[in-house]
Image 1 (cartoon, rainbow, N blue to C red):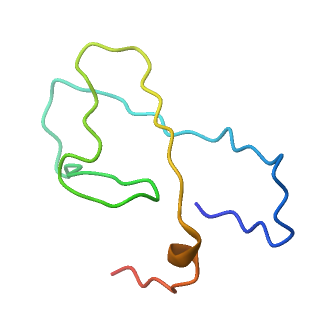
Image 2 (tube, helix red, strand yellow):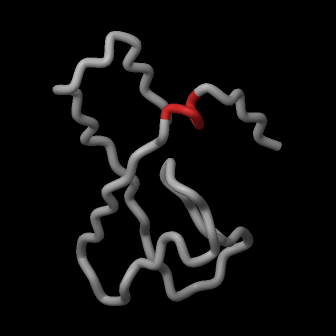
Length: 72
């Protein structure tokens, strides 16, 4: 998800989210890792066990939003 703020309003807030569901049964596809605007690495998002809610505060530097990304 990407939001364009060309007028540079400082009072814009995003309250979107991602919901994860856990299962005891192994599924065909598995999630490796996910990143949110900041530099990515394998340990960039480590969700602690047994938590009901996990909040990630993140940002995306301006130089990153100027680059056109291609996803395969």
